Image (cartoon, rainbow, N blue to C red; front, side, top):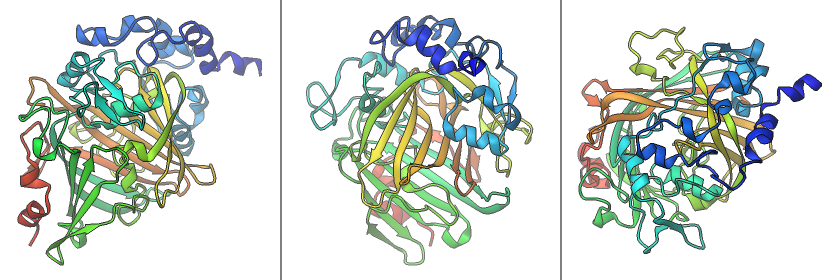
Length: 454
C-alpha cells in the first residue's frame, strides 16, 4: 500500500505543482502563460515544470518513451490514463509511449493559433453562456478563451470550430468489428463542413452575411455499401447554442430531400455502429444543450500527432501509427500531455441515454481528442479517441494542414469498435481545406438534389 501511494502520479502532481500555483495560470501553463510562447513560435517547455514534460521523470522512471503498454503492464499508467483506455488495454490494445510534443501547432493550424493570439480578450459569455465578442457580435475566430477559467470556456474553445478551418472536405472509411474482432460492416463516407462565422482565411470573412445566424453547416454523404450509397445528411448548426440543428436528408430511392427531426441524436448512425449523431466531433450537440463542470486538471496521456493513420504509406499492423488495417485494436502512440482539463457534461436533450460525458481538453491545444461516456446507471459505456496530425497537404494559408487522421469509437459494454480512417484521395475525391467550398454549391436541399446519385 505504501508503494502505491508513492506511485500515485495524480497525488504527485497535486503536491508538487498544482497547489503551489492555484489560480495563477489556470488552463494556460503553470510557470508562465502558453499563449506568448505560441505567438513567438517557441515550444511549450518554458510554461511547465520539467517533470510534467517527461513521462520518465513524472513516473520516476517506471514509464519511458519507446515502452509498449499492454495488458501485462497497464497498471503503470492507470493514474494518467482515461478510464476507457484502461479498459481497452486490459482487453488487448497495445500502445507505444512517445516523447511529449512541445510544439503548440502540432494539432492546430498556424493561422488558428495566430488568430487566438490576435483576438485574446475580445470574447465574452452572456448570462445564458452564449459566446459573443465584447461588442455583441458573433465570435471572430481562433480559440475565444486561450486561458480558460471554467468548463464552459474550455468547451467553447473546442466546439466553436472543432476542425479549425473555414471549409473542409474529408474522405473516410469506417470498419466496425465485434468483440472477437470479426468485421461486421464497412462504410465509406464524405464529410464536409463550412464555417459561417469566425472565418479566418477564405473570403468573405469573418462572417458569411447570408448565414450570419449560423455557426457552420455540415454534409455527410455515404459512398458505400451500395444499399445506402448516395444517402446524404445536411445539418445547419445555429449560432444560438441552445437551439438544435436543422437536418435535411436526401434519400436516393425517392430522389427527394426531406426535413427530418434533429431530436434522434442518441441512436446508432448505421447498423452495428458504436457512435451516435451526438458523438461526432466528440461533442456534436449545441454547447448549451448540455451543462458543463470542471472536474479536474492534471497531466494525462493523450494521443500523439505521430498517429497519421492511412497516410502512413507502407505501415503494417505492427506499426504504432494507427495503421490502415482491419483489426479491432490498431496500434497507436501516446504521450504525456502536461495539462489536461477534465470537462464533464450532462445532456438535457430528449432521448439522451448518457448520464455523463468527460471531455479531455488539452490545456495547450485547447481542443479535445478523447472522451469517456457513462450510461444512465452510471456505468462506463464508451470511449472515443480522435487522432489528429499532419495530413501532408497545404492548408491554403501558408502552412500545413493538420486534421483528423483516425477515430476510435469503442462501445466498452458490447466490446464493439467502429474505427475510422481518413485519406488524402479516394478515386476522384480528395481531402481539402480552406478551398473556397460554398454552402450554395454543396449544403442546401437544392445543392443536394443537383449533386445526388441518380
